[in-house]
Image (cartoon, rainbow, N blue to C red; front, top):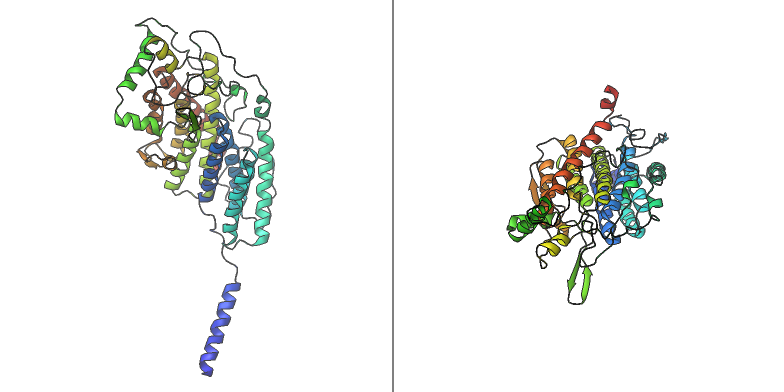
Length: 447
């Protein structure tokens, strides 16, 4: 009996000593999972707060840049800061305490910047507190936690200060778009007849572009109502494609709809259908790709930062053309000159037609992602599953961008030149970004 008691006592002491040992928290955050979860929450809030696609691109970009700037501080020196590379992003030094856990600091920076850019701050705050509670349970000591959060907040403050100089807040007081009576000009479309959104987005400071019109598109086809004219044929093409749509084409149209303004009408009742923005879709693809490639947390931060920059600058380039040409949408033209009862498959978004936003930002994002993962990168796009749509598989980012672009024809909301020239503009934006900024330290050193 005494022997058993002795053995039990030794065992109890051993258990107690083991339980008192600090847990190894070095892999508490090993990949991008926590940042992806934070981004998903940001997407939910963007939808909830009904931010426009251009504004949403801004909300995705600054938090991703902040998270990446913490990753740059890793002692490996693998990554290079974007300070001094992005337009007007001033360099500064961040003091790092010995007990800082950089992956946590990166996540803290993401949460702080993201929360500063939305309306429903409490929703992001709740999500952050839940994530931090889970991380504390993984054994991160209190002093490490506090030091990491302090660093993340210092980086976030620098990025927030940078964001305040991009002309966004000033643009909130710029005049609204004035509807033109010109027959070729864009008109608000049913069912809500909303005014044109963000007519001054070309005045927002881009991250890498030298000017909003750096990759100015050729003018759209001259407006004409004559049967057989080039413009009439372009509208007729949209009319016929929608009229003879296959199931696959219909599936593609709905998969890439990404219209946060969709309103359903049933009798006298109108209700909004919450949807992800085009930029949100591609940020989802970026996260999926990072996970597929098994990137660590630093690589994930790089992927989200570079993709968000491409999407942001893509919207600036696209909106610059939209409110220069201010072109009539197919729905308006076809109803007036071809068939008054015709309806597009997708609800027409509330801004001018030329060029196609999906075509521009999809190609800007795809060029950026291709530079990170290669041209033959297979991925399963499950971004729209949360919104009731099935997955789609792609063999490359460029093929996904091609499908996103042509989806606008299938949806009946764009003429072909807006798709073709929009894709060309987006590729130029993406290529320019890839050539202008370097995130890998060895590449910058080689210049």
